[in-house]
Amino acid sequence: MRTLLRIGTRASLLAVTQSTWIKNQIEHAHPGTQVELVKITTKGDRILDVPLAKVGGKGLFVKEIEDALLAEEVDLAVHSMKDVPTELPAGLHIGIIPVRETPKDALLSVKYASVETLPQGATVGTSSLRRKSQLAAMRPDLNIVDLRGNIDTRLRKLDEGLFDAIILAGAGLHRLGLEHRITTLLEPEQMLPAISQGALGIELRRNDTELFAGLQFLHHRTTAIAVAAERAFLLRLEGGCQVPIGAHATLSGTTITLTGLIAAIDGRRILKETATGPLDQAEALGLSLADTLLTKGGKAILDAVYCAESPATK
Image (cartoon, rainbow, N blue to C red):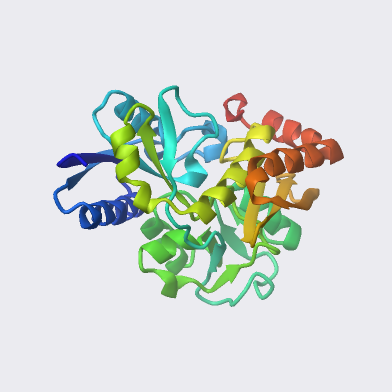
């Protein structure tokens, strides 16, 4: 392992916290290596006044970091896997996937204990079309409003009474030590998570075989298999992270179970299916499940979403 490594990361508190965890793990495993964080502002970080779905859903939080990686300005990049497009630039790969945090979404509220106990017409904040659609299906009476900004900003708006509840990824709250703010975690049966939610990915240059070998201690096989199935599902649907698509894989023995979802934005139509298969067929299972949903009406739902949003979304 070389003596100096540079990690490319977004500058948000959560991204820096995640990258710092990777930095600490590397320095512990390789005592002679110093790791530096290089903070990079992405397009998704700069645009805060427009819903993400209208900006374009692919690569919003990774492109500038990948450019730095290709230019050898950084040696590796740490991403939230739910932000990573299924198609990567030539010369790069997600070489390492560490152990996954909770994939579940979290409901946060000052006054109310659950989605079910929110009063009629309550205002709920989320920036995710996937969350909006599933929430609307559960509670069509709710007033669901776009909520952008970092976690501190979102929590402040909740505390100021601008929202009755907000929905965030449970993983981010756990990593920031804010799990005490979680009112309840939403089970996947209630709200299917985003593809790869809770998982991190370390992106490397394909020709950097020495670094790839040196970071193998961070790779978590079970997480990687689950993420592979979920991302194959997304790949077949050609979806960005801002499309109402969800998937969640679990492993048991030699079997993987994958549940996938395609939803209309208003929640009036949700297609959800579950399939199982052997671990070594995880990606094939994801592709097959996506095909099943597409043939059952998923293509028409996605076509309507793409027409309703910016053409750049697809």
